[in-house]
Image (cartoon, rainbow, N blue to C red; front, top):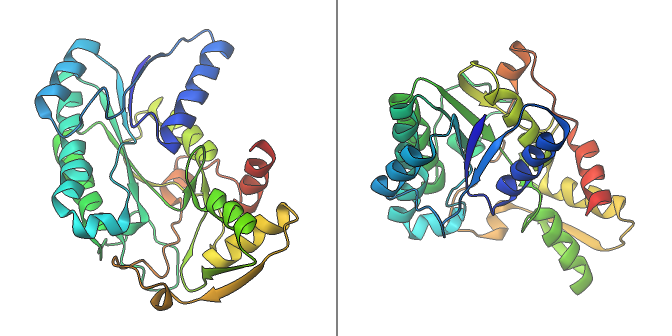
Length: 284
């Protein structure tokens, strides 16, 4: 199998590359890996995308590239839609032309964050931020341009790179007190689990929309407490509200996703978020 990954230097891209390379060593079925990032492929340039895909002829394109600065999207709307929507469409169209599968990574931000029950794949979306709207359009354009698509919505991702876990550990070294939001609820998700899910899915023809997060839920405040408890770090954590944080982009208050479609096809291999976090902190 030949796989093209965009955003290979991001958290998920790094983990995908690592797992696919490990599979090459462990399995007789070899995977030819094409890893690209902004320095080698601008996904907003349709001609560049078409040329590379036509030249490399991948069987699967995994798009992990995105403009994920949620507040930055509010002030740079054109960039948000070019990367998150047009970029996704360009890759999907190029994949369709050569008969390849496309896997698009999306987000919990396509929902409005209201209610108190985990969202399933068939629940109506209602993005409230530019980031969420651009990712929602990206989903729509992929669905419309390539029937061989997987849309994976994930949330609160952490892995190799800048993320909430490492930010908390860094702040604990610098401060005696840390303020953390306690009124946003979600599911912290390890890139290890998400990459494993992606690899399992691309080997099937179970096309469609999937929710893909670790099991369970917590607030950012609870997440921080668990991080410090596992690392035996003593630091004062103050719970604050989203309003007190005063960020430009609206955040979903309750954005827990249920991996309902993965359960239906027997591929929900995600761990409880606490277990995945414990392994991550041991590895890092």
